[in-house]
Image (cartoon, rainbow, N blue to C red):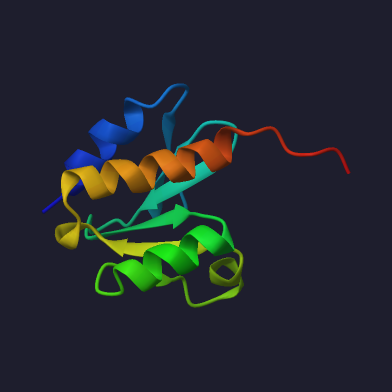
Length: 107
């Protein structure tokens, strides 16, 4: 069982991560935001690729679900923190952090 405090501690341990307000949530970002924490601390939205999202949702549908909007179609995924073990939370954070840390390809 993970908590918002676990998410904050683990996210801030990842290189270059800073915490900042993002609408009604707290965001954790490097080059870009990679996870946001709901104001009630119960859920977090991770920025996965669509393929990563499909895998997480297939393997643990009781924990992960696509965000129900256009962001969800691009990989934004909600996780129920209380259902995540700390290793599962750390894995999700590292995946999203790696995605956000990469330089974008030139257009």
